[in-house]
Amino acid sequence: MPKSKVLIENASAPAGNNIGLPAEGSQLFKVKGKYYLFNITWPKNGMRTVVIHRADKISGPYEGRLALQDKGVAQGGLIDTPDGKWFSYLFRDRGAVGRIPYLVPVTWKDGWPELGVNGKVPYTLNLPSNKSLIPTIVNSDDFSRNKKDRKLPLVWQWNHNPVNTLWSLSDRKGYLRLTTGRIDTSVINARNTLTQRTIGPVCSATISLDVSNMKDRDNAGFLLLQKKYGWVGVKAENGKKSIVMVKTNADGGQEEQENIPLEEKTIQFKINCDFTDLKDEATFFYSLDGKSWNAIGNKLKMEYTLPHFMGYRFGLFNYATQNTGGYVDFDYFHITDYLAQEN
Image (tube, rainbow, N blue to C red; front, side):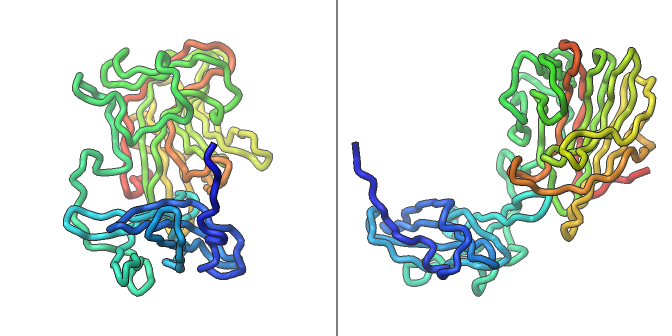
C-alpha cells in the first residue's frame, strides 16, 4: 500500500494565523510545467479567501500566497479560452438564491496567476454571448419532444434518483406526467420531484397542471424547495379538491396557509422570487384561466440552509399520503428573469 505524504504542512498560512476554516476545496492545475493548487480558507471575522500554492513537481515543495480576498468570492480554479484569455471560476454565497458563480479575470505575473482587477472582483465583464448547446442554466419547457430531443435537458434535476417508470413525457404528448408510487408524509420526502434552480436578482415561474386523475389525499403542484420550503398546489380529500398554499412552520413541519375549493380540472400556478439586496421573499399565486392571478397564502421568507446545501429550486411534484397510482399532467414550465404581472 502506498504511503501517504503531507505536501503542505499548513496550507492556510498565507491568509494569516487567525483562521476559522482551514484550507479546503482543493483544485490542482498544471500550467506550463508548474503545478498550481487552489484552496479556500476562512479567517475568523473575515471572508472566504483564495490561497494558491505552486510547485515544479506535484510532490512539492510548494510555496504559497494569498490570491484573492474580496466579497467572499472564492472556491474554484483556473480556466482558459481558445483565444488565450484566463479566468478563475469561483462562487459567492448570496442568501437564499444560493451560491452564485463569478468569473474573475486572471493575468500572469512572474509565474503566478493574479486574480481580479487590482485585487478586486469586478461586477461586470465584457464577454461575448454564450452560443453553446446549453445557453442558460435555467430554461422554460413546454414538454414537447421529438425522437431527436433529450427527454429532459440538463437544466432539470430530480430531487432524488428518479423512479423512471413513474414519470413520462410520452403517455400524454406535450405533457410531463408524474405518477405516485409510494406513501409520503410531506413534499420534502416525495420522490420524482423535478426541479430547476431559481435565479436572481428576481425571477418568476408559472406552470399549468391537470389534476383530473389525482387520488384521494394526493398532493400535487409547484414547490420552492429548501429546508424552509413553500408550495402552492392542489389537495384531494374526501372526494373533493382544493387549492392550497403550504409552508414550513417554526417546528420544521408543514402548515397549510390557505384553502380554496376547486372545481376545475386544470389550474395554473405562479411563484415570484425576489432576491434583490437579500430581500429573499417569495409570493404564490393561482389562476383558473392563465390570465387573472390571485395571491394565495402568506409570503415565504426564504433562507439558505446547510442541510440542503443549495439555493432555492422550483419543483414540480405529486405525492400520495394514502393510496398510490394517482397521476397529474404538467403542460408547461415557463420562467422569466423579471417579476411577472401579479394581477
